[in-house]
Length: 481
Image (cartoon, rainbow, N blue to C red; front, side, top):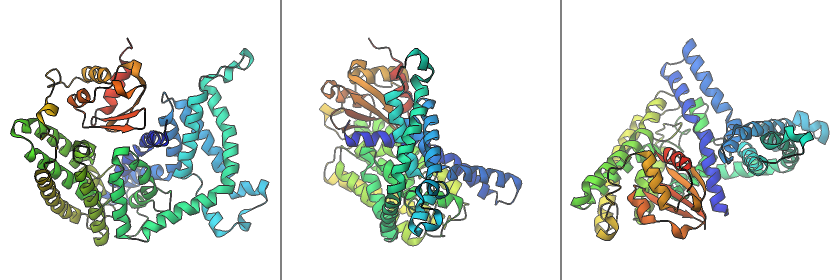
Protein backbone atom coordinates (compact mmCIF):
# COMPACT_ATOMS: atom_id res chain seq x y z
CA UNK A 1 0.00 0.00 0.00
CA UNK A 2 1.38 3.42 -0.93
CA UNK A 3 1.76 6.25 1.60
CA UNK A 4 -1.38 8.09 0.47
CA UNK A 5 -3.44 4.92 0.66
CA UNK A 6 -2.14 4.19 4.15
CA UNK A 7 -2.86 7.72 5.35
CA UNK A 8 -6.40 7.30 4.07
CA UNK A 9 -6.66 4.09 6.04
CA UNK A 10 -5.63 5.97 9.18
CA UNK A 11 -8.08 8.74 8.30
CA UNK A 12 -10.87 6.19 8.20
CA UNK A 13 -9.78 4.75 11.55
CA UNK A 14 -9.86 8.25 13.06
CA UNK A 15 -13.61 8.33 12.46
CA UNK A 16 -14.10 5.75 15.22
CA UNK A 17 -13.06 8.07 18.09
CA UNK A 18 -14.44 11.15 16.33
CA UNK A 19 -17.85 9.46 16.26
CA UNK A 20 -17.91 9.78 20.07
CA UNK A 21 -17.65 13.58 19.98
CA UNK A 22 -21.32 14.21 19.13
CA UNK A 23 -22.21 12.48 22.40
CA UNK A 24 -20.02 14.96 24.28
CA UNK A 25 -21.55 17.86 22.37
CA UNK A 26 -25.07 16.64 23.14
CA UNK A 27 -24.41 16.24 26.87
CA UNK A 28 -22.64 19.57 27.24
CA UNK A 29 -25.17 21.33 25.02
CA UNK A 30 -28.00 20.10 27.25
CA UNK A 31 -26.02 21.23 30.29
CA UNK A 32 -25.71 24.76 28.94
CA UNK A 33 -29.31 24.80 27.71
CA UNK A 34 -30.42 24.08 31.28
CA UNK A 35 -28.23 27.02 32.39
CA UNK A 36 -26.24 24.83 34.78
CA UNK A 37 -26.25 24.87 38.54
CA UNK A 38 -28.78 22.11 39.12
CA UNK A 39 -28.04 18.48 39.74
CA UNK A 40 -29.20 17.26 36.33
CA UNK A 41 -27.19 19.82 34.32
CA UNK A 42 -24.06 19.14 36.38
CA UNK A 43 -24.56 15.41 35.88
CA UNK A 44 -24.83 15.82 32.10
CA UNK A 45 -22.04 18.40 31.81
CA UNK A 46 -19.52 16.36 33.76
CA UNK A 47 -20.33 13.32 31.62
CA UNK A 48 -19.62 15.33 28.46
CA UNK A 49 -16.41 16.80 29.88
CA UNK A 50 -15.26 13.29 30.77
CA UNK A 51 -15.34 12.42 27.05
CA UNK A 52 -13.42 15.56 26.07
CA UNK A 53 -10.84 14.91 28.78
CA UNK A 54 -10.18 11.38 27.53
CA UNK A 55 -9.32 12.27 23.92
CA UNK A 56 -5.91 10.60 23.97
CA UNK A 57 -7.40 7.34 25.21
CA UNK A 58 -10.28 7.53 22.73
CA UNK A 59 -7.86 8.00 19.84
CA UNK A 60 -5.57 5.17 20.95
CA UNK A 61 -8.36 2.64 21.40
CA UNK A 62 -10.45 3.87 18.47
CA UNK A 63 -7.63 3.95 15.92
CA UNK A 64 -6.35 0.51 16.95
CA UNK A 65 -9.87 -0.89 16.67
CA UNK A 66 -10.45 0.88 13.33
CA UNK A 67 -7.18 -0.37 11.83
CA UNK A 68 -7.61 -3.96 13.03
CA UNK A 69 -8.44 -6.17 10.06
CA UNK A 70 -11.53 -7.57 11.76
CA UNK A 71 -12.28 -4.65 14.11
CA UNK A 72 -11.63 -6.90 17.08
CA UNK A 73 -11.76 -5.60 20.65
CA UNK A 74 -8.41 -7.24 21.41
CA UNK A 75 -6.75 -4.48 19.39
CA UNK A 76 -8.43 -1.80 21.51
CA UNK A 77 -7.46 -3.60 24.73
CA UNK A 78 -3.87 -3.77 23.52
CA UNK A 79 -3.87 -0.05 22.76
CA UNK A 80 -5.11 0.64 26.28
CA UNK A 81 -2.19 -1.37 27.64
CA UNK A 82 0.21 0.47 25.36
CA UNK A 83 -0.94 3.97 26.21
CA UNK A 84 -1.04 3.14 29.93
CA UNK A 85 2.64 2.19 29.84
CA UNK A 86 3.66 5.16 27.69
CA UNK A 87 1.68 7.62 29.79
CA UNK A 88 3.24 6.28 32.98
CA UNK A 89 6.85 6.10 31.78
CA UNK A 90 6.74 9.63 30.33
CA UNK A 91 5.60 11.06 33.66
CA UNK A 92 8.61 13.12 34.92
CA UNK A 93 8.01 11.77 38.44
CA UNK A 94 8.58 8.27 37.05
CA UNK A 95 11.12 8.86 34.27
CA UNK A 96 13.32 10.88 36.62
CA UNK A 97 13.91 7.71 38.63
CA UNK A 98 15.73 5.99 35.77
CA UNK A 99 17.02 8.97 33.74
CA UNK A 100 18.14 11.19 36.60
CA UNK A 101 16.31 14.12 34.96
CA UNK A 102 13.63 14.95 37.50
CA UNK A 103 10.83 17.47 36.96
CA UNK A 104 12.72 20.25 38.77
CA UNK A 105 15.67 19.83 36.37
CA UNK A 106 13.56 19.99 33.19
CA UNK A 107 13.24 23.07 31.02
CA UNK A 108 9.87 24.81 30.89
CA UNK A 109 9.34 23.50 27.36
CA UNK A 110 10.06 19.90 28.36
CA UNK A 111 7.82 20.18 31.41
CA UNK A 112 4.98 21.44 29.22
CA UNK A 113 5.57 18.71 26.64
CA UNK A 114 5.54 15.87 29.17
CA UNK A 115 2.47 17.28 30.88
CA UNK A 116 0.67 16.53 27.60
CA UNK A 117 1.35 12.80 27.49
CA UNK A 118 -1.99 11.12 26.85
CA UNK A 119 -2.90 13.49 24.02
CA UNK A 120 -4.51 12.68 20.66
CA UNK A 121 -1.17 12.68 18.81
CA UNK A 122 0.41 10.03 21.04
CA UNK A 123 -2.96 8.28 21.17
CA UNK A 124 -3.01 8.01 17.37
CA UNK A 125 0.64 6.87 17.35
CA UNK A 126 -0.05 4.10 19.87
CA UNK A 127 -3.25 3.17 18.02
CA UNK A 128 -1.50 2.87 14.65
CA UNK A 129 1.35 0.76 16.02
CA UNK A 130 -1.03 -1.48 17.97
CA UNK A 131 -3.35 -1.91 14.99
CA UNK A 132 -0.44 -3.02 12.83
CA UNK A 133 0.80 -5.41 15.52
CA UNK A 134 -2.67 -6.92 15.71
CA UNK A 135 -2.95 -7.37 11.95
CA UNK A 136 0.46 -9.01 11.76
CA UNK A 137 0.52 -11.20 14.86
CA UNK A 138 -3.07 -11.94 15.93
CA UNK A 139 -2.97 -15.36 14.19
CA UNK A 140 0.44 -16.48 15.50
CA UNK A 141 0.57 -20.02 16.89
CA UNK A 142 2.96 -21.24 19.62
CA UNK A 143 3.85 -24.77 20.79
CA UNK A 144 1.38 -26.47 23.11
CA UNK A 145 3.22 -25.39 26.27
CA UNK A 146 2.71 -21.73 25.31
CA UNK A 147 -0.58 -22.18 23.49
CA UNK A 148 -2.42 -19.89 25.93
CA UNK A 149 -0.50 -16.93 24.50
CA UNK A 150 -1.30 -17.76 20.87
CA UNK A 151 -3.51 -15.70 18.59
CA UNK A 152 -5.16 -12.54 19.82
CA UNK A 153 -3.88 -12.99 23.39
CA UNK A 154 -0.35 -12.48 22.11
CA UNK A 155 -1.05 -8.92 20.94
CA UNK A 156 -1.41 -7.24 24.39
CA UNK A 157 1.78 -8.97 25.52
CA UNK A 158 3.63 -7.81 22.42
CA UNK A 159 2.23 -4.32 22.87
CA UNK A 160 3.77 -4.17 26.34
CA UNK A 161 7.26 -4.56 24.89
CA UNK A 162 6.47 -2.20 22.01
CA UNK A 163 5.44 0.42 24.54
CA UNK A 164 8.75 0.16 26.38
CA UNK A 165 10.67 1.00 23.23
CA UNK A 166 8.21 3.72 22.22
CA UNK A 167 8.48 5.30 25.67
CA UNK A 168 12.27 5.47 25.45
CA UNK A 169 12.02 6.95 21.96
CA UNK A 170 9.47 9.57 23.06
CA UNK A 171 11.55 10.52 26.11
CA UNK A 172 14.14 11.78 23.65
CA UNK A 173 12.05 13.02 20.74
CA UNK A 174 8.69 14.08 22.21
CA UNK A 175 9.68 17.62 23.34
CA UNK A 176 10.90 18.35 19.79
CA UNK A 177 7.81 16.86 18.16
CA UNK A 178 5.50 18.64 20.58
CA UNK A 179 7.32 21.93 19.99
CA UNK A 180 6.98 21.50 16.21
CA UNK A 181 3.26 20.78 16.51
CA UNK A 182 2.74 23.83 18.69
CA UNK A 183 4.77 25.98 16.29
CA UNK A 184 2.69 24.75 13.35
CA UNK A 185 -0.51 25.51 15.21
CA UNK A 186 0.74 28.93 16.29
CA UNK A 187 1.64 29.79 12.70
CA UNK A 188 -2.08 29.57 11.91
CA UNK A 189 -3.24 31.09 15.17
CA UNK A 190 -0.94 34.07 14.63
CA UNK A 191 -2.64 34.65 11.27
CA UNK A 192 -5.97 35.05 13.03
CA UNK A 193 -8.95 35.08 10.69
CA UNK A 194 -6.69 34.51 7.67
CA UNK A 195 -5.41 31.32 9.30
CA UNK A 196 -8.98 30.12 9.75
CA UNK A 197 -9.59 30.83 6.07
CA UNK A 198 -6.51 28.87 5.01
CA UNK A 199 -7.61 25.95 7.15
CA UNK A 200 -11.05 26.00 5.50
CA UNK A 201 -9.49 26.11 2.03
CA UNK A 202 -7.22 23.10 2.55
CA UNK A 203 -9.91 21.25 4.49
CA UNK A 204 -12.12 21.21 1.39
CA UNK A 205 -9.32 20.54 -1.09
CA UNK A 206 -8.36 17.40 0.83
CA UNK A 207 -11.91 15.99 0.71
CA UNK A 208 -11.20 13.82 -2.41
CA UNK A 209 -8.32 12.10 -0.64
CA UNK A 210 -10.04 11.70 2.72
CA UNK A 211 -7.02 13.32 4.39
CA UNK A 212 -9.05 16.26 5.66
CA UNK A 213 -9.73 14.16 8.76
CA UNK A 214 -6.01 14.21 9.58
CA UNK A 215 -5.79 17.98 9.06
CA UNK A 216 -8.80 18.52 11.30
CA UNK A 217 -7.07 16.86 14.25
CA UNK A 218 -4.52 19.67 14.41
CA UNK A 219 -7.11 22.42 14.76
CA UNK A 220 -10.05 20.75 16.48
CA UNK A 221 -8.19 18.69 19.08
CA UNK A 222 -5.21 19.21 21.36
CA UNK A 223 -2.40 18.17 19.05
CA UNK A 224 -0.89 21.61 18.55
CA UNK A 225 -2.28 23.54 21.47
CA UNK A 226 -5.36 24.79 19.55
CA UNK A 227 -8.06 22.31 20.67
CA UNK A 228 -10.79 24.48 19.14
CA UNK A 229 -13.54 21.88 19.50
CA UNK A 230 -12.59 20.79 23.01
CA UNK A 231 -12.16 24.34 24.32
CA UNK A 232 -15.42 25.53 22.79
CA UNK A 233 -17.54 22.84 24.39
CA UNK A 234 -15.76 22.98 27.74
CA UNK A 235 -16.10 26.77 27.86
CA UNK A 236 -12.35 27.21 28.30
CA UNK A 237 -11.41 29.78 25.69
CA UNK A 238 -11.87 33.34 24.51
CA UNK A 239 -15.28 34.65 23.56
CA UNK A 240 -15.29 35.67 19.90
CA UNK A 241 -12.17 33.62 19.10
CA UNK A 242 -12.63 30.04 20.30
CA UNK A 243 -14.62 28.23 17.63
CA UNK A 244 -13.05 30.12 14.72
CA UNK A 245 -11.96 26.84 13.08
CA UNK A 246 -15.55 25.57 13.10
CA UNK A 247 -17.96 28.52 12.85
CA UNK A 248 -17.41 29.36 9.19
CA UNK A 249 -18.41 25.86 8.13
CA UNK A 250 -22.04 26.39 9.17
CA UNK A 251 -22.88 28.90 6.39
CA UNK A 252 -21.26 26.58 3.82
CA UNK A 253 -22.58 23.21 4.91
CA UNK A 254 -26.07 24.24 5.91
CA UNK A 255 -26.76 26.91 3.30
CA UNK A 256 -24.15 27.29 0.56
CA UNK A 257 -23.90 23.71 -0.62
CA UNK A 258 -27.66 23.03 -0.62
CA UNK A 259 -28.01 26.18 -2.74
CA UNK A 260 -25.29 24.86 -5.05
CA UNK A 261 -27.28 21.64 -5.32
CA UNK A 262 -30.35 23.68 -6.31
CA UNK A 263 -28.29 25.39 -9.04
CA UNK A 264 -27.15 22.01 -10.32
CA UNK A 265 -30.78 20.87 -10.43
CA UNK A 266 -31.91 23.97 -12.33
CA UNK A 267 -29.12 23.57 -14.87
CA UNK A 268 -29.93 19.91 -15.58
CA UNK A 269 -31.54 18.96 -18.86
CA UNK A 270 -35.36 18.93 -18.65
CA UNK A 271 -35.57 15.17 -19.07
CA UNK A 272 -33.11 14.66 -16.20
CA UNK A 273 -34.47 17.16 -13.69
CA UNK A 274 -36.63 14.71 -11.78
CA UNK A 275 -33.73 12.35 -11.17
CA UNK A 276 -31.24 15.13 -10.33
CA UNK A 277 -33.80 16.92 -8.20
CA UNK A 278 -34.40 13.92 -5.96
CA UNK A 279 -30.65 13.42 -5.58
CA UNK A 280 -29.96 17.06 -4.73
CA UNK A 281 -32.96 17.29 -2.40
CA UNK A 282 -31.75 14.31 -0.37
CA UNK A 283 -28.13 15.48 -0.39
CA UNK A 284 -29.08 19.06 0.47
CA UNK A 285 -31.30 17.96 3.33
CA UNK A 286 -28.51 15.79 4.70
CA UNK A 287 -26.05 18.69 4.52
CA UNK A 288 -28.44 21.12 6.22
CA UNK A 289 -29.45 18.81 9.06
CA UNK A 290 -26.24 16.87 9.76
CA UNK A 291 -23.46 18.76 7.97
CA UNK A 292 -22.50 15.72 5.87
CA UNK A 293 -21.70 17.36 2.55
CA UNK A 294 -19.87 14.69 0.53
CA UNK A 295 -22.98 13.58 -1.43
CA UNK A 296 -23.23 17.10 -2.90
CA UNK A 297 -19.49 17.70 -3.24
CA UNK A 298 -18.84 14.48 -5.12
CA UNK A 299 -21.68 15.30 -7.47
CA UNK A 300 -19.53 18.02 -9.04
CA UNK A 301 -16.03 17.39 -7.71
CA UNK A 302 -14.83 15.36 -10.69
CA UNK A 303 -17.41 16.34 -13.26
CA UNK A 304 -16.51 20.03 -12.84
CA UNK A 305 -13.27 20.45 -10.86
CA UNK A 306 -13.35 24.23 -11.32
CA UNK A 307 -16.50 24.29 -9.18
CA UNK A 308 -14.71 22.41 -6.44
CA UNK A 309 -11.87 24.93 -6.37
CA UNK A 310 -14.47 27.71 -6.22
CA UNK A 311 -16.16 25.83 -3.39
CA UNK A 312 -12.86 25.62 -1.46
CA UNK A 313 -12.28 29.36 -1.99
CA UNK A 314 -15.80 30.21 -0.80
CA UNK A 315 -15.29 28.01 2.26
CA UNK A 316 -12.11 29.95 3.02
CA UNK A 317 -14.05 33.21 2.64
CA UNK A 318 -16.79 31.99 4.98
CA UNK A 319 -14.25 30.93 7.60
CA UNK A 320 -12.50 34.30 7.28
CA UNK A 321 -15.70 36.31 7.58
CA UNK A 322 -17.00 34.42 10.63
CA UNK A 323 -13.61 34.64 12.37
CA UNK A 324 -13.17 38.33 11.52
CA UNK A 325 -16.60 39.23 12.87
CA UNK A 326 -16.29 36.98 15.92
CA UNK A 327 -19.46 35.04 15.08
CA UNK A 328 -18.93 31.73 16.82
CA UNK A 329 -20.67 28.37 17.04
CA UNK A 330 -19.21 24.90 17.35
CA UNK A 331 -19.98 21.31 16.48
CA UNK A 332 -19.31 17.87 17.82
CA UNK A 333 -19.75 16.14 14.47
CA UNK A 334 -20.18 18.59 11.59
CA UNK A 335 -21.64 21.96 10.70
CA UNK A 336 -25.31 21.02 10.43
CA UNK A 337 -28.43 22.34 12.11
CA UNK A 338 -28.37 19.72 14.87
CA UNK A 339 -24.96 20.83 16.13
CA UNK A 340 -25.84 24.48 15.60
CA UNK A 341 -28.86 24.21 17.88
CA UNK A 342 -26.88 22.30 20.52
CA UNK A 343 -24.10 24.91 20.56
CA UNK A 344 -26.45 27.92 20.62
CA UNK A 345 -26.53 28.22 24.42
CA UNK A 346 -22.87 27.42 25.15
CA UNK A 347 -20.92 30.22 26.88
CA UNK A 348 -18.51 30.68 23.95
CA UNK A 349 -21.24 30.86 21.30
CA UNK A 350 -21.00 34.49 20.16
CA UNK A 351 -23.78 35.99 18.05
CA UNK A 352 -24.45 32.60 16.43
CA UNK A 353 -27.62 33.93 14.81
CA UNK A 354 -25.35 36.00 12.58
CA UNK A 355 -24.08 32.76 11.07
CA UNK A 356 -27.62 32.18 9.84
CA UNK A 357 -27.59 35.60 8.17
CA UNK A 358 -24.16 34.82 6.72
CA UNK A 359 -25.51 31.46 5.56
CA UNK A 360 -28.36 33.10 3.66
CA UNK A 361 -25.87 35.41 1.93
CA UNK A 362 -23.63 32.48 1.07
CA UNK A 363 -26.62 30.53 -0.24
CA UNK A 364 -27.21 33.37 -2.73
CA UNK A 365 -23.49 33.52 -3.61
CA UNK A 366 -23.18 29.76 -4.10
CA UNK A 367 -26.33 29.59 -6.21
CA UNK A 368 -25.31 32.55 -8.38
CA UNK A 369 -21.70 31.49 -8.90
CA UNK A 370 -22.52 27.84 -9.57
CA UNK A 371 -25.36 28.61 -11.96
CA UNK A 372 -23.25 31.15 -13.87
CA UNK A 373 -20.21 28.85 -14.12
CA UNK A 374 -22.24 25.79 -15.15
CA UNK A 375 -24.02 27.62 -17.96
CA UNK A 376 -21.12 29.85 -19.05
CA UNK A 377 -18.59 27.01 -19.33
CA UNK A 378 -21.09 24.23 -20.12
CA UNK A 379 -19.91 22.17 -17.16
CA UNK A 380 -21.09 18.55 -17.14
CA UNK A 381 -22.68 18.53 -13.72
CA UNK A 382 -25.31 15.83 -12.96
CA UNK A 383 -28.09 15.92 -15.54
CA UNK A 384 -25.99 17.73 -18.15
CA UNK A 385 -23.87 14.78 -19.29
CA UNK A 386 -23.74 13.68 -22.89
CA UNK A 387 -26.43 11.16 -23.75
CA UNK A 388 -23.92 8.34 -24.11
CA UNK A 389 -22.81 8.91 -20.52
CA UNK A 390 -26.21 9.68 -19.05
CA UNK A 391 -28.18 6.53 -19.78
CA UNK A 392 -29.29 4.75 -16.66
CA UNK A 393 -29.71 1.02 -16.56
CA UNK A 394 -33.34 0.00 -16.26
CA UNK A 395 -32.26 -2.77 -13.96
CA UNK A 396 -30.98 -0.13 -11.55
CA UNK A 397 -33.89 2.31 -11.69
CA UNK A 398 -35.72 2.47 -8.39
CA UNK A 399 -33.34 0.01 -6.79
CA UNK A 400 -33.28 0.64 -3.01
CA UNK A 401 -32.71 -2.84 -1.57
CA UNK A 402 -29.32 -2.77 0.17
CA UNK A 403 -28.59 -6.46 -0.39
CA UNK A 404 -29.50 -6.17 -4.06
CA UNK A 405 -27.40 -3.05 -4.53
CA UNK A 406 -24.47 -4.71 -2.74
CA UNK A 407 -24.61 -7.65 -5.15
CA UNK A 408 -24.52 -5.29 -8.13
CA UNK A 409 -21.66 -3.23 -6.71
CA UNK A 410 -19.71 -6.41 -6.07
CA UNK A 411 -20.26 -7.56 -9.66
CA UNK A 412 -19.19 -4.17 -11.03
CA UNK A 413 -16.00 -4.38 -8.95
CA UNK A 414 -15.05 -7.78 -10.30
CA UNK A 415 -16.42 -9.93 -7.49
CA UNK A 416 -14.74 -11.18 -4.34
CA UNK A 417 -11.94 -12.59 -6.47
CA UNK A 418 -10.87 -9.03 -7.28
CA UNK A 419 -11.25 -7.60 -3.76
CA UNK A 420 -8.50 -7.82 -1.18
CA UNK A 421 -10.40 -5.77 1.41
CA UNK A 422 -13.76 -4.05 1.87
CA UNK A 423 -14.00 -1.11 4.24
CA UNK A 424 -16.08 2.03 4.62
CA UNK A 425 -16.10 5.57 5.95
CA UNK A 426 -19.13 7.78 6.59
CA UNK A 427 -20.14 8.12 2.94
CA UNK A 428 -17.69 6.00 0.97
CA UNK A 429 -16.64 2.43 0.34
CA UNK A 430 -12.87 1.99 0.75
CA UNK A 431 -11.64 -0.92 -1.31
CA UNK A 432 -8.35 -2.61 -2.08
CA UNK A 433 -8.43 -4.29 -5.49
CA UNK A 434 -6.23 -6.86 -7.14
CA UNK A 435 -6.82 -5.49 -10.64
CA UNK A 436 -8.45 -2.11 -11.31
CA UNK A 437 -8.75 -2.80 -15.02
CA UNK A 438 -11.64 -5.22 -14.54
CA UNK A 439 -13.98 -2.82 -12.71
CA UNK A 440 -16.94 -1.29 -14.52
CA UNK A 441 -16.94 2.39 -13.55
CA UNK A 442 -19.93 3.20 -15.75
CA UNK A 443 -21.98 0.52 -14.01
CA UNK A 444 -20.84 1.74 -10.57
CA UNK A 445 -22.13 5.23 -11.38
CA UNK A 446 -25.37 3.82 -12.74
CA UNK A 447 -25.90 2.19 -9.34
CA UNK A 448 -25.96 5.65 -7.78
CA UNK A 449 -22.33 6.30 -6.86
CA UNK A 450 -21.64 10.02 -6.69
CA UNK A 451 -17.93 9.68 -7.30
CA UNK A 452 -15.03 7.26 -7.74
CA UNK A 453 -11.60 8.09 -6.33
CA UNK A 454 -8.49 6.17 -7.44
CA UNK A 455 -5.78 6.07 -4.76
CA UNK A 456 -2.55 4.54 -5.98
CA UNK A 457 -2.46 1.32 -7.96
CA UNK A 458 -4.80 -0.82 -5.87
CA UNK A 459 -7.00 1.39 -3.69
CA UNK A 460 -10.40 2.69 -4.73
CA UNK A 461 -13.06 4.76 -3.00
CA UNK A 462 -16.69 4.72 -4.11
CA UNK A 463 -18.77 7.56 -2.72
CA UNK A 464 -22.33 6.31 -2.25
CA UNK A 465 -23.70 8.33 0.68
CA UNK A 466 -24.77 7.54 4.23
CA UNK A 467 -25.60 3.90 3.42
CA UNK A 468 -21.91 3.09 2.82
CA UNK A 469 -21.61 1.02 6.00
CA UNK A 470 -24.72 -1.00 5.17
CA UNK A 471 -23.55 -1.70 1.62
CA UNK A 472 -20.04 -2.66 2.77
CA UNK A 473 -21.44 -5.04 5.38
CA UNK A 474 -23.81 -6.57 2.83
CA UNK A 475 -20.96 -7.03 0.33
CA UNK A 476 -18.86 -8.86 2.92
CA UNK A 477 -21.73 -11.26 3.64
CA UNK A 478 -22.17 -12.24 -0.01
CA UNK A 479 -20.58 -15.69 -0.43
CA UNK A 480 -17.69 -16.00 -2.85
CA UNK A 481 -18.40 -18.08 -5.93
